[in-house]
Image (tube, rainbow, N blue to C red):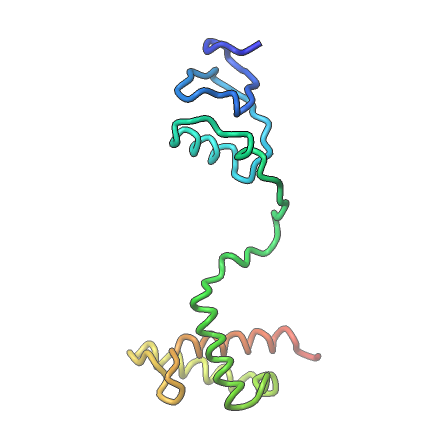
Length: 149
């Protein structure tokens, strides 16, 4: 039986909700969609129409707790890759793995200080000082992770 608006609680399939309908104080929804029920309900209300079964049955993907690679700022990563390519052309592929950590600490500070004093691009490479600094941090981090290898 369809619940009445005066009911305190009801279970209503989301696809049966009517736009503008007065609902009970509490409704329970069985959910299988990609978006949260709250987001789907907001979308539904904003569109002023019912959600279709196709919209509700988009499949499941259990990725809670997994790394969110989509959060990377790809334009910044591209700058880092540009520095890595520049270094590989100048010194050889992965030569940075053979250099003492202290050299990268010094280079990090030089690039950061140059940027802080208003110099955006490195005079030698023509690349952004912060991209160089990020590479140096990445090299230092890699060396910390691979101590004793």
